[in-house]
Amino acid sequence: MLKIKVTFLLIIITMGLFAQTSAPKYSNEFLAIGVGARALGMSNSYVTSVNDVTAGYWNPAGLTRIEKDFSLGLMHAEYFAGIAKYDYGGFAAKIDSMSSFGVSVIRFGVDDIPNTTQLIDADGNINYDRISSFSVADYAFLFSYARKSTIPGLRYGANVKIIYRKVGDFAKAYGFGLDLGGQYDYKGWNFGLMARDVTSTFNAWSFSLDEKTVDVFEATGNEIPENSTEVTLPKVIIGVGKNIMISKKFNFLGEVNFDLSTDGKRNVLITGDPVSIDPHAGIEVGYDNLIFLRLGVGNFQKVTDIYANDKISYQPNFGIGIKFKGISLDYALSDIGDQSEALYSNIFSLRFDFNKIVQSKEQNR
Picture (cartoon, rainbow, N blue to C red):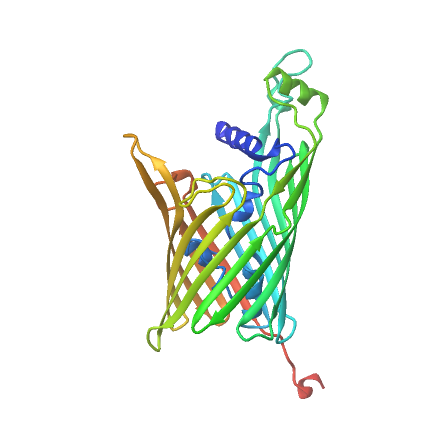
């Protein structure tokens, strides 16, 4: 377990923490995982259909569609055999009949990582009592506002997000970004647009390494990190969906999304430089607005097998949900393909929708 945690830490450091002033791929990638088991069961194909508290993440325009006055959402997931913890909490409320606001908090972290930089004392002796532990954690705080347009069927919204990333006492970063979103209903079809990091998101890294840690880095041939700025370039997600009532009890919801990244060539279905396009799709079948079955497919990648043959891999997802009297419990099984067993995850999310408590004049007397 110790080796696994150390290896995972090295991966994190290699991919992001020591990046110099630039716009690296997968910057702030923890914000691309997604929130809510409903969306994850549909392979994140949700920018058009979202109508609950998670709209603060997926598309703030959807906050105008929350069913009741207030909505509270929670989610927990674990990755890499439970080493990494991923948590989400969100709150949304109607301001009036035309507008809503929301607050979302996301944390992705690895805790209890052994710090062996002080393992050897000044006399050259190994002392295991000198091993301490620390956490690597990424936080995002999203503040959302949404409003219905005077144009029928059009809704729009925006996120202001603050990023905080911390690596024990060694390093920390602060970032700021802006998202814009819109939804439009036209002749039974639903369209969505989510522009993330529209002004680019800047993470300012600062490092605090003591002399002993610097000596260990130099002795092991590691680069000494310097204060730097990491830039997350914009990403645009376009969606189209349709909700069909099959009968009085059954309804069908389908949605297709296209993620347009601008940080250079990626290994997705449609590659380009600087724009690559990653399509994904999801469906939901509901019974009496009570029980829901969800399927999705995404994460298309071009891979080469052991026989040097090129092929397209993909990741299917599955989910179910129950909704009763303002309480929704959703489950998703993510990464059920053969991509990587380490990313196999069971994801649960819970949502509470409730109205204001209004007392009559007689009750107040």
